[in-house]
Amino acid sequence: MNYAPLTDQLLPDNISRSFLVPLSEPNLLSPNTSFIGNFQFVWDSVSYGAIQTCPRKYKFSIIDGYQLSPTPSTLLFGIYFHKIQEVWHKLLAHGMDKDLALLRCVRLAGLLGENLLNDRNERTKETLIRATVWYLDQFKNDPAQTNIRPDGTPAVEYSFQLPLFNIDNQTIYLAGHLDRVATFQNSVYLCDYKTTKSDLGDRFLSTFKPSYQFEGYLAAAHILSSVPTSVFPSPPTGLIIDGIQLGVTFTRFQRFIVRITKPEIDEYLTDLEYTIKVKAKGYAEANHWPAEKTSCHLYGGCEFLSVCSKPPQDRERILKTNYVKRTWDPAKAR
Amino acid sequence: MSYTDLLKGNIPAESLDRVETLNETLSRAAADWTMQDLETIVAGLRTQREKWNEAQAAGSRKLVRSSNVAGNTVVKKGKFSGLAAGLSKVKV
Image (cartoon, rainbow over all chains, first blue to last red; front, side):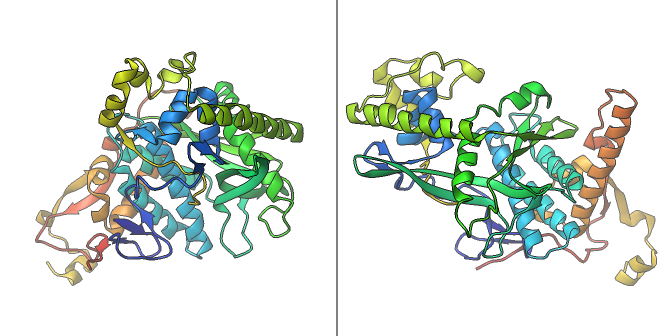
């Protein structure tokens, strides 16, 4: 089933329309076009982060495509909040009145929120709707104005795939999806939303730098800004991150600006190149993906902890029983 | 009760069941929400935010639950079926 926010209708999957929001995850498994054999040539922040965290985790999650089932609400809530914000900006770009667009976003938040597991009190249908209404009330007249693409559409969920370098005549690409490109005080920024149940203090802010995700986005934006018809009139100044603290009965917001310098971006690109040439290429040729065991217990434990804690001969069975296969393909635009 | 009666405000007391809490309105299926429900949800969440802001300003740690915020007025079924009947579902 899909939701059509322009007309406030539910439409079955067999009806095609340009602006639809799927209410469930379609096509869990499809051929991964970012790979040749077991070597990845289109990289994004998720796959880069995975191989740096643990090559075996990279094998399970990116190459084999195993993911926890059902999707944890900690992950799904953020995906849904991003989708609702994308729909908000698209509705405004279609000329819809802000008050009506808010009602459509509330409907969408309700529909999506009904998919959330009831495993986290701060990430429920109710808290998703509350975060949507309070956030859009607070940023109804956002001083960061969304940039417009050359085709007239807003620069939200802006997909990119950029050639970086070659390995053995194979071009390696950096890919990703920018949530929003906006202009604030005559400078260009990349915008993102981050939800947490913790305080929006210095510790929260420190998680964004260094960051595979944001350095990768800014690297891409710098490259894109050299293209005359791109959505970037100038290289981006930095990131605008809207922190969203989720409570059971409240939502709190804090806007942060993060700056990452050109030398830091150059370092990111050099590190990425060496990681792919040395680690990814080496492991792919050996077809062996060693575990990085210092990562197993970080951040509440790796999602594959229950697999790696069992003998090698049992792991495939556990993966097939407790996980679903879902293709993670950075080459696919959203 | 006719639609004209409703427009004039001639609503017999027995026609009205009670006022839902915001919590109850939110717990109904989103596909069934009418435009009035959606507007009520937004208004209810704004009220909740005002109360929460007041509590914060007063230094209180008081929780403002959606079960303590008014939601929609529920009209008894069979008495009056409103103009909006929820989200349209296109069947093919």
